[in-house]
Image 1 (cartoon, rainbow, N blue to C red):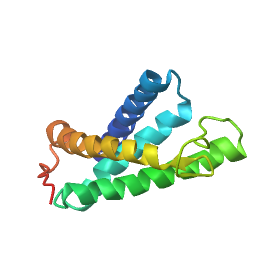
Image 2 (image 1 turned 135 degrees about the vertical axis):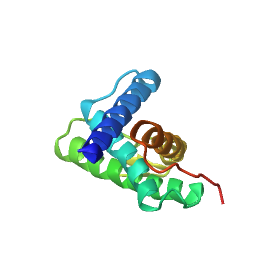
Image 3 (image 1 turned 90 degrees about the horizontal axis):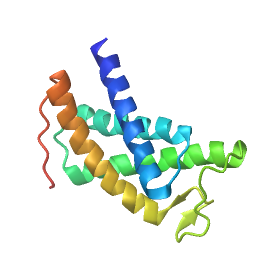
Image 4 (image 1 turned 60 degrees about the horizontal axis):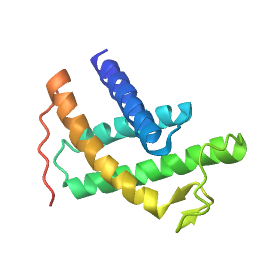
Length: 138
């Protein structure tokens, strides 16, 4: 039951923060971004748990960026291409793939992933008494 509580807490917090991030910077968002943001925040925590928070931060960010990018691409294909909800379109941005992912946003997401990793580790430690994270860059 404790793990379920942790996952729901992280998912709701991640979803809320990402939805608010989009509202602040884009002026609008979509409910699917709440779901996706929450899922990505849970992954930021989960990969740290899997590695005992011992992997260098750059590796953790790399794993999370791959997960976030793959999740954004998959979500984009579903919500933008199949369902035609037109939540986002990166067609006009450089280094894009099918308008669903692009290099500029992958770079932005890497910063968000670093924040997500650090904050999820400390939140799990302080709120749920999970293992104390020990972050190191190299």
